[in-house]
Length: 289
Image (cartoon, rainbow, N blue to C red; front, side, top):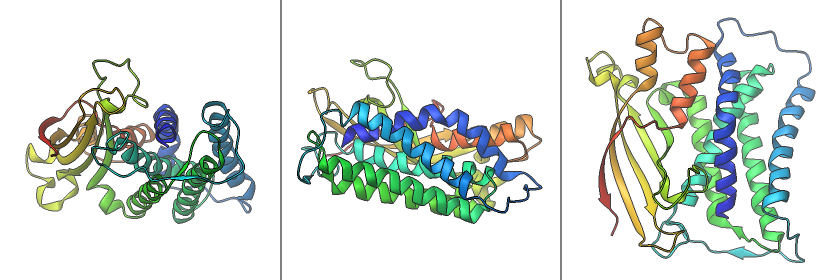
């Protein structure tokens, strides 16, 4: 079900800048008074998000219709004999993780408490992607993948944990980096060989290193990338160790007097930096045997 990850990543990346503005509303010093009944607002957010994904699905994935039975497929995980070397699985995890991070501020901006917003974002994201996977099982062209469903759960869980624990969010990020493959056009969502997924640790998030010159601006991480699987070329799976620049800390010190999360614009930029790895990293590649 790699095209679900493809479409989800495309949708989330396209929506990121717009949603980042809404995300900024979540840190205002004086939160707005919640309206007496949030049912309509929450339903509108859930309905609009679901309708957008359903419309895309019917146009791109399920235009062959649905069959009479439910079919399953064992796609494997990250093996050499899988369709995409596991990149699609990390795509599912990233899409669900990003979905929680993007929807939480939308729910909070509508007037929900932060705790309720996290729950709503988690269940909405998981519900949408689980429904897509189940519909695949009934479609004529695709099948239900247990591996994809489990990675959806993992992504939602990661998003909920980081949203619930600001102290952990200050330390860890899960990001997508993209560099166009030589034999592909610029397509961050469908060019699997150009995708690299990274788990980053930020020195600025730890008290022991937060005030150390130079070090406070650095991030360290591990990443994974698989190439050549969808093109029929030489298949290669690589682990990466990375050292990068913490752009959120640079922005805070350069433009906001060292303060984090201080304005809507700044919070929007911070959300972008949490989800997208910009080309500020140095990598050490280690092939997977």
